[in-house]
Image 1 (spheres, one colour):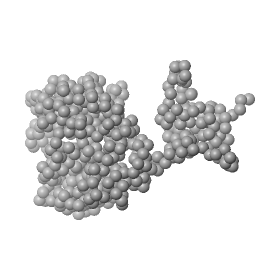
Image 2 (image 1 turned 135 degrees about the vertical axis):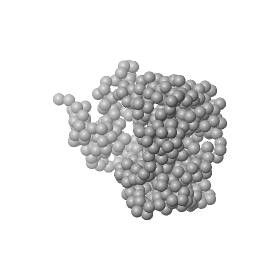
Image 3 (image 1 turned 90 degrees about the vertical axis):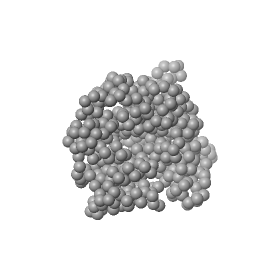
Amino acid sequence: MPACILIVDDDPVQRRLLEAAVTKFGYRAIVAEDGAAGLKALDGADGGSIAAMILDLSMPGMDGIGVLKTMRERGIELPVIVQTAQGGIETVVSAMRNGAFDFVVKPASPERLRTAIANALKIGALGGEARRPARSGGVLTFKDLVTSSPAMERVIRLGQKAAASNIPILIEGESGVGKELVARAIQGSSGRRSKPFVTVNCGAIPDNLVESILFGHEKGSFTGATERHTGKFVEAHTGTLFLDEIGDLPLDVQVKLLRAVQEGEVDPVGGRSTVKVDIRLISATHRNLLQQVKDGKFREDLFYRLNVYPIFVPPLRERRDDIPQLVRHFMANVAPSQPRGRIMDISARALSMLQAYDWPGNIRQLENAVFRASVLCEGDVLTEEEFPQIRAQVEGAVVLSERSVDPAPRDEPARPIPAEEGLQAALTAQAPITGVGLLRALDDRGNVRSLAEVELEMIRLAIDHYNGRMSEVARRLGIGRSTLYRKLKEYGIDPVTGRAEQPA
């Protein structure tokens, strides 16, 4: 099911344009003619399916800022993209301080709008999972994390130790693994559990507003600054500041961030004096910060200040034991929005299929897949039929597995073997596959294997994994089809007959 976007704008022409654009991007659109109608839509039958909002700031009656404030009072935490045709930076800063995720200037280009929506949906999917405990007024701790995987035991152990101090923490991991969830668990297990937890997505803030939003600004410090505003550092005073996607910060802002981390004080834009702050700083990134330091995109001194206590959150494919628990957890969360008693369980085959998938989008992707399946399901048990996209990608690997376990009887009549299938058989005969996704670095004598041996084994694994589909093998290996066949010839495999060439 496509994501649902709520459009709130008093201009009927603008509403139609936005609705057409959102629909063209592949999303479902709900429109509201003013702020009150927008809030009513959030409370309505479709409110639970709304994934993001495009909100006009200038409207009669309740304007955009009023909508944002009301949403915050009601605990509605939804990524909001504000749009405005007039007003200076002060207006935008006010919107961001009241919870807006991003802003666009009318008329926004389709690409700018598409990017803003995509970013909002990414952060909203993970943020929704991370914020659920806060909506009920509870404090998230490590006991609330849905996991029993040995791979996560180290994360929990490191997090619990970190919670007992104020040491700066850098949480690393792919997008969607739950880095903010770990940060909230650290805060909820520390002495600052009852203090503010302020989140800043550094990748979602326009470059010209980063400094003002983080450190604040004084009245009259720049054009449009009609009021004084405290920044996120001051908002987090005595509590925890979580800087998500820290690797996206501009270099000039990194200098001021370094001072804030070192000295515990910030310099508001236009301010005459520094402001002391007492915060617990937790940063997160999906990037390789060390590589960014080498590339000159991240300050080395800041990196070592932030990387005092690194915690790596493994991807979901490395903790498949968590998938059954996570699936049932997400099913329970979806249940309130479904007819009572409709979804009761998930079949063993469906669960095995989900565990066989690699989940490049990690927990965020799994949650969305379970939500979609729950909507599609017409019975009370989720089956493979409700996960068509996952099933299509896992099916090839299942076929290969069944073929290797149940060979054809010896008295079965011979059949012609296609060249590509013969090629796969010849490669398989040369050396046994040690396991999907595993490559041995050392030979039987404990010496490092040659690159040629490793390359051949990788090609062989790819051919096996993609069922001999050579175009797909070449694409996944990042080489051309002709290059693939050339390499096979170099390794003594005839790409036409699929058999090992005989020595001359």
